[in-house]
Image (cartoon, rainbow, N blue to C red; front, side):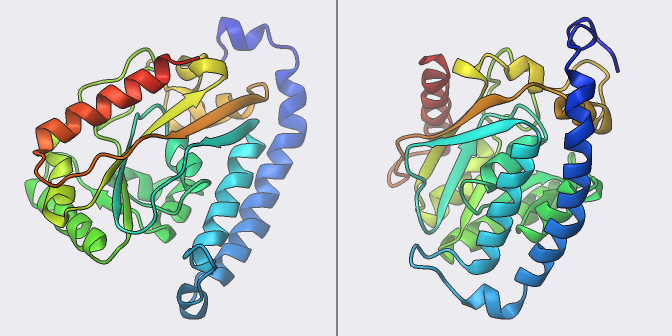
Length: 261
């Protein structure tokens, strides 16, 4: 899907020449190695930081994946360990993989993602909790799984906006998705995802009007190399705090982080 900015970039075809083979190689060899890592033995073996070796495999696969797309990810701040709710602004389909490259999380995501090439497979193996939009029974099940995982000391990640945006602003955070953290008395850590210097490439990475997943993937694959920052912000403790206040505070901290140079 050619646009004025992509058509003017004469280096784009050159990037495809080496990135497409790398992506295919990563899909075949990388996923094979991850499949070998996802087994009961590696699930029980833990590193010194508490991360299991299968989680390490998924994290490294995700790190290499975003790097093939020209994204040089940098972590700012320290992600919480143990049971916690991570909430982030939602720009693109690649957000989940970017976050997986920094911290193993079981994400809440729309059910359609399970059918996406590569991303769907790794998301499912990463413990994604799938939600069927508009289905109250599905939402009830999602909330129950979130609560159960946090009570077990496992991390859950959500995008409180409920859908991707166009990259120009951060939408309203739905407070209901914070309720499991309140019930589990688990801390909430806001995460700001900034594509490009100072978040200058948010609209570039985001879906364009009438652009589907494959079109966006192909376009982003040809983008220039750029820095990407994952800001793990000050956590919010849930004791004595309602879900609406949690949603408001988390959103304010992400907006403030996006505004900082």
